[in-house]
Length: 496
Ligand code: HEM
Image (cartoon, rainbow, N blue to C red; front, top):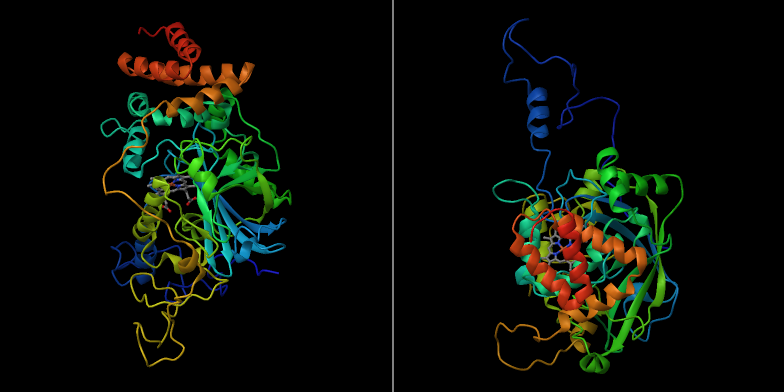
């Protein structure tokens, strides 16, 4: 049985109030002054200790996914996929402790849980081979298929540089000029864009990964066992005013009263040969692999059963990255995944400092971690004591050594061909085929809600050329879709 994940570092050690260096405090209400009515003395270390620490309490918020809630739990494997992967934590019957953080994407740290957005679903598996992170979202696809567009995507959806307002013109300007986003636009404006709670949504890894053993490639999905439940657009907006913390509260209270949420963890698997002949480019994260072609295979259950003791230490300081991998799972040529492998630890070195992996919530505490990295701000560990801090070395027979026969080095070899270049993805009608299928899959009220949600948003765009361009994108997927949005926008009084 796996030991529990660590919570925050230190709890109170004494009932006596002390300064940060442990000196007992005699008076916590009155500053030290020169005489009864005189100025405060610089020698009042307790006052200065208190104020200087307080003014340094904030760290940079995550540049995206700033607002979130987290919980601990475990993942238990219920199927035998040992033919597909040698990952230890995916072997039959294995139970692995996890930490999960849910989030919204575009809003600042203080914004509302309920408003229309994609939701983050990040899971840190504390495995014996090191931490494995699945950093997913509640939609199966992404807005773009090249990481070079990510800063532009986010600049267009976050605050305007002049007004500091979220801006409808920039939002639709970028999307209407980036038709590969249409699939994600469809999911975003469907009712799944306003989930009832974090417990009532699925989570998708979205990218293609390689399972190491049988040369399979796979997609991951966490299917909620609570059932999908969404707010109406009106309820989501109402909650913004009445309870902006609705999803954070729902998760905390459910776990607090023992109503532990769970998800069925599933994969879709294809062989490399199938992958090379599939009609969709399997490295394009704006596409799904339809379940009819590749059905979901349940491999285990993820359960959340413990709230963190301290929000800042455990949730705010948690750091997930798609580059935190373990033997048995490897990356693919998905360009967005490739960009993410670099971006996450990079932002975390800035947000939390270069030693962020030593923080309790981030520690690979079930693996034996040994390397030659030393020093730097926030060295929380013993810094590997007296062991040599370089390799090759001959002084310490127990010093860490490279593993030339690691299974990844042995099996994960990718054939490459062609010349370096900035290649666009195949130029075709591809961007419209899957959104069209999704639009037609939505029936009756669900499709009406999609149109209404789009119209209620796009009608705020000031520049009619942007609206017309986006209507043309909808029309190219399905003329009726474009027509309905156009009629809705005109009915709102907007001139096109
Ligand atoms: C958070 C970058 C695409 C899911 C973040 C953060 C950055 C980032 C810088 C903040 C991390 C931190 O401060 O700890 C990028 C880039 C992307 C990309 C450059 C594409 C080029 C995606 C995709 C997904 C995703 C495709 C999901 C499939 C998440 C989640 C978080 C996050 C869930 C929050 C993790 C947490 O709870 O701490 N992303 N991202 N991102 N991203 Fe991405």
